[in-house]
Length: 286
Ligand code: A2P
Image (cartoon, rainbow, N blue to C red; front, side):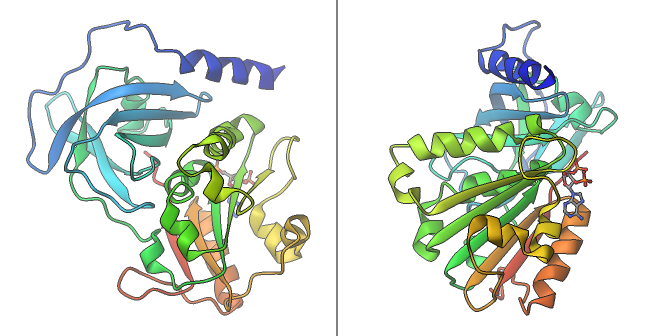
């Protein structure tokens, strides 16, 4: 019953929302930012939502990078947070996937944005979850929890990822089934995509697990890696730094545990300056 109501909520909110109030405009134009317009908002659960904004013609980014997003406070001072860019590099708009923190300085307000509202967008995307920070390899593991899937939404739609790796394995662990919907819709749409659908055919694996509800394999992906259960389920050999590369994005606990797992298996941490075998970035909240 609970699942059905979640699905209905997500479907309803996919329709253009009626404008319940005049759009919020931004009068100050801080130099480090551009002022962009909210194009659409989709609420997945009471904790998760996605929003799309206009993209300045000059805005370039690499798949996996993040950017500062903000709204001015009552005094016009920007409240800013880092957001991974979830849209593919060729998209005309920019897409973001966010948690709602009820007392979070930014997301307590951001969760109420509507199409037509204005929002501040930083000018300089950065980050380490990029293909450039990894050595070439055979298989790319993208390990995420919660909204940590966002940078991978860009990477799994980037042809460069498939030029560099034969196979891409996206893992997404959430507490509840309703929290998997964003990733499930993303991958389903990708398989249908005329630009890249054929390229990913047979080369993208989407593995989901749940920790607090039935509906997908049960457990943390880290435990499944340690026990070997993940590789049995995927029918792939265990992690091997000779052929595998890993990107990690999610909660602090995931980052620490996955980093330890990688290092124990001989993986070296990479960066833009020194590409190596795995890279890490926290999913941003607040
Ligand atoms: P769990 O329910 O066992 O804490 P959150 O919503 O708190 O950000 O968590 C998102 C998902 O990440 C949850 O399924 C949670 O599992 C899982 N998780 C939290 N910490 C870790 C960790 N150290 N390693 C793997 N998964 C984790």
